[in-house]
Amino acid sequence: MRRTVPTQRTSDGPPPEPGRRRPARGMRRRSSLVLLACAVFFTALSPLMRWYAFPRLAKIPPGQYQDMVLEARPATLLNYGTMKAERVPKVTIVQTLKGDVAASDRIEKSAGRDIVVWDALSYVAGPDGKMVSAIPERYLFDAHSQEPVHATGEMVDGDPVRREGIEFKWPFLTERRDYTYFDAQTRTSAPIHYKGTRTFRGLEVYYFEQTIPWTKVALPKKMPVKGITPQSVAKMGTTRWYSTKRMFWVEPVTGAPVNGQEIHQEELRGGDLLPGGGKVTAFAGHVKMRADYVDSTVALVTSQRTLVLLLTRYLPWGFLLLGAALLALSLYLEARGRRPAPAAVRPPAPAATAGDGAAGGP
Image 1 (cartoon, rainbow, N blue to C red):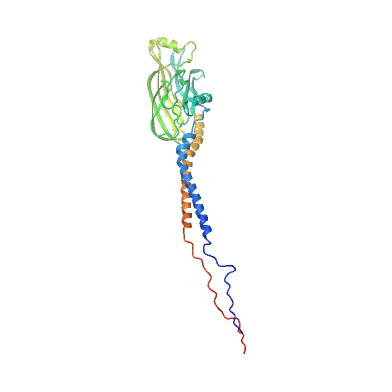
Image 2 (image 1 turned 90 degrees about the vertical axis):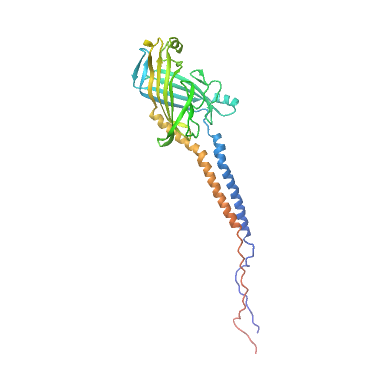
């Protein structure tokens, strides 16, 4: 009988063929290209967010309204009945800023940029609540840089002015340097000096000081006594003089003062209005922001600070790190795709074996 050699079965299916790993390699190649494109996009977006988007998105809204209460405790105030200076328990100064949206829109059409128009009022009241002075202002400035804008209507107490420098607010991302600050009493601008970095209510702030020496200034249009006008006082030869030391604690990211103080002095000098033609203190005191307004200002500035940091720090750095991570992942996938594919393992040739039994014939 013939011998039969059975075939050894090594697998249930056909042996793997060379090149079967190519689809996975092509998928990695496409994924690496997509990741590379995303890495370039986010890396390019990082400087654009900081240097292009932020200067255009960060601005003062034209319709903003805010008020501030400051007090001098105690203070010296002129009694116009006796023309003598008296010590009083307090003098209150209420400052309001109100945006004029209609005026902003009108000026923007001719200026070709975002303009904010603030109508400001500084109202000084004595301990009895009666008016001491009320000085209105119209302040026009660039909504993004806070630089003054010169247009019809710019004034202090009805007098046309031409501001140079800042007033009320510093620019976004305030720097450690001196700035030019406009003084409404003298209608002039002078340097306000950076004096160092401090901590105020948990915030890092820049401290600024400005000293205005004794200067002859205009009398307020509104006088506290009926029948007395700036013109009548001027006819008597009496003049008004003013000096102050101005202090601001400015949060540098938003450019907003979180605290402000003044050591303020005013005098009337000479003329027939004063006995003996000498001088008398009209108002003197250390003016400070009231504590509750300091608290509300710090809370408001803290929330606005987060929005500015989002555009200047968090998003730009986040996009840059994300771009670097995507680039690294893209290079990793590309490197894996370029590795040579392992040789296909072929099954061994079947070995010949003897049958279970042999049949033979005689």
